Image (cartoon, rainbow, N blue to C red; front, top):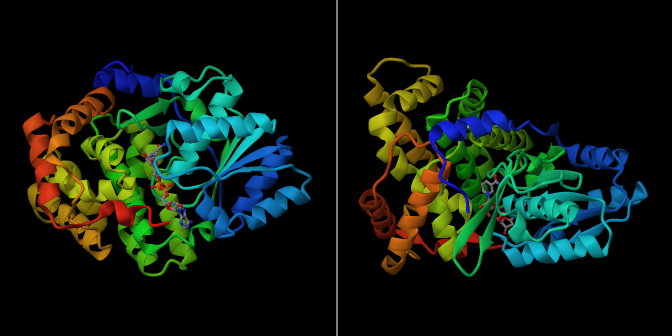
Length: 407
Ligand code: NAD
């Protein structure tokens, strides 16, 4: 079990175990450049980790062809599902070992990248999933590990963590270790063209949540603040553009850069109550991570406003270029911007799956997660958390789960 960490210890953890940004390739040919780098670095038998849907989309044809032309023997593991479970990882470990793979090349969203991280760590350390769950449990470096994200949201391509669902206890478990950061990453807008508008919106709101939670964390690092602010600016401007036209490659590229920057920021500063609550809801109801965050975000902005008005006001000044008005007024305008973005992206106000019989456990686990991991600007009581859950349940919503994993 992870021990409770104080804000000071969290900051020390970041200082003592710094997270470097992975080597970054960007642009519409960058997936092939990344595959060339993997080959040049010695990969001969990569395990390509992905999901069945992406394989069907033929998104991987070019990179598979490239590896073949380079003389590599690729093994495809397409068993990743959204919110991957221990069983998925154990399957991936088995396939990797049976085929004597020497590296891992992940192409997919956060679920795929997280699964690939843990497979790469377990194979090089010759252990099972249980043994790497927790903080700094990855003893040896992972297999050489390369990533092409096909969603722009989780930023898992640059973070030191992976989230795996424990099916029996309805809990998301974390593997946190700087060794999980990939060797190199390709941000390739071509791999995002097929992302449907609903998933574009939900994952983009996940990135926005990362940036805002990082920026309002009391763990402050100047580079994380800079990256979070830039990510917020890019997402507010370009997320609606890619939602409306998924083929706008320039905008896709900028949103994917924003997601990368937001994740780098939260990897240093930490997250907050949006994620703490969202993780419990996804574990109970299998709701998609990004959409769940998007629904909770406005509630937490309002909850935090009493202590974060100056931070929200700073963001509003950056976005509007206007500094007239009190912090309070500017903070309200920033929150309204986030509301407006949610409406433009057709994010529902709540969701129907929530059952009152689960509230107690959800609240307990959410508050424990926040206490253990995040340097939140304002502490939440169980009663306040219950009010937020009740408000989400009462708001009109679609069947989030159905929207969720439509693919
Ligand atoms: P996802 O990976 O679960 O993918 C969502 C859906 O989108 C899937 O059905 C997938 O097949 C589809 N999809 C992905 N790319 C596509 C494309 N280009 N075209 C068409 N369909 C595509 O979604 P996600 O939001 O990227 O990842 C969520 C997971 O990431 C959760 O398990 C969450 O807990 C985890 N997460 C991890 C971190 C981290 O730092 N490691 C941070 C945040 C979230």
